[in-house]
Length: 185
Image (cartoon, rainbow, N blue to C red; front, side):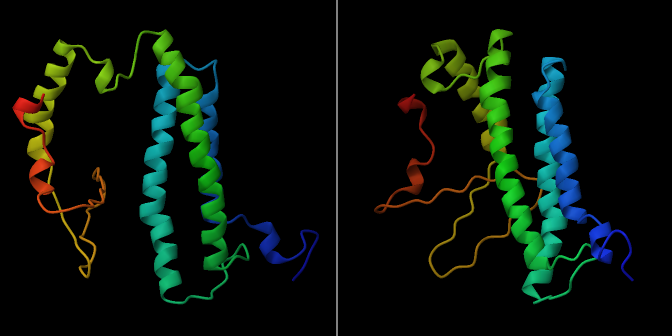
C-alpha cells in the first residue's frame, strides 16, 4: 500500500543508522564550546564506548547474518550488505570527527587548563620513575601475551578488554626483548 509517503520502507529509518545519528548528536556536545570542558571530554568518551558496544552487538549481528548469506531486506528497505556498507562509511567519517574533536579542540583546551599529555621524551626523571613503577606494579601484572603464528588461528579475545596487536618481524630472540630490563632505563 503506497500512500503520500511513497513506498512503505520510505516511512522507516534504518535502526543502525538511526543509532549512529544519535551518537553523532552526542559527539556534537563534545564540540560545543558552551559545555564545560570536562563534560565535553566525557561526551567524547561516551561516543567511544557507545561505538564499541554498537560494534559488539549490532554490527556483530549484521556480520553474522552476512556470513549466513542473508538476503533479507529490513523494514527500512536495506539488505544486510547495504547496511554494513553504510555503517562503514558513517563510522569512518565519525571516527575522523572523534579524533579531530580531541586533537584539535579538547586536547589544546585541556592543555590551556593545565592538563597535558606527556610522551616519554617529555618526562623528567621523577615522572619517568613514577610511570615505570606504576607500570611494573599495576599494569605488567595484568598483561597477558598471546602469540599466533603462520597457520594458526587467531587467538580468542574477550570483549571489553584493551588489546594491543603487534606484528613482530625479524630473527630469533625477539620475545625476551619485549620488556626493558631495569638496567635499560
